[in-house]
Length: 336
Figure 1 (cartoon, helix red, strand yellow):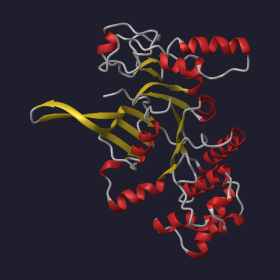
Figure 2 (tube, rainbow, N blue to C red):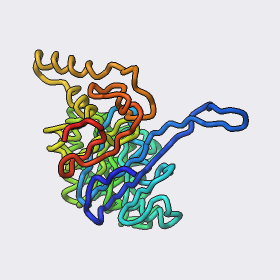
Figure 3 (tube, rainbow, N blue to C red):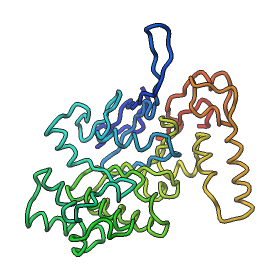
Figure 4 (tube, rainbow, N blue to C red):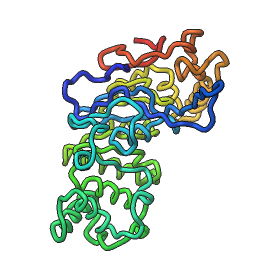
């Protein structure tokens, strides 16, 4: 089991040894014994999120971040392990109990247009969860819709319009308002600004920060942009090929990243200096070379790692262990 990354007794969210494996086509075996290959999108992930905290989850595309977010709130079933929200195991809840949990655990998706019904007005889209959860109908629902839109920077005039009539940033505000309207405690924000223009991203990030302060929200904030993660997060978890490789308070991780993959991600951020940018690219390219000694049984990063030592890195997967205080790293040779 992977080491827990916080020690407080009663976190709002606790993820323990969570796995989500997808079967792949084909397989290998002898006779009647067929061994199907699986995609280990989430592979033995554990972490806690305290009430009022933002945990930033970062990693390159395909690392399993979005899948993890969906499994945490129960939109996808876990292969094994547990996601516990407010003391309730998501996998064990059924019917009304799971519906009640979803009132307190909501998601904001990357593409606001695809997550909104194009045939529904904004008023109908936001009133729908109020009806589904038995919160309000009629005039009371209209009042709550207006309040949610106001909180997200949209006026009452938006209520009678359709998603196609709004810009990308405005649609994301509608998506946030829809999640907010049922007054959740916990929100998984899955790449909420990656589909937006840079000029709009800061507005949405600031909105999410303001809503966190006003409504006491707790976030799992998923992104591949390190600058965004640094701005919004109290703690950061770095994910690579389905596993957490480093977790730490945000400032500690950015000041002194210990895992080679985290170092690579930080070196990949462009800088506004010609000479420094050239050096950044040179260093980043140095860890893109595949190591022919790496195999699939050890550290998932060993094929790209400049610190890899064989055979240990190819044969033994490192566990997420404390190196200093609440700074955790999954690496055989990362500094303490």
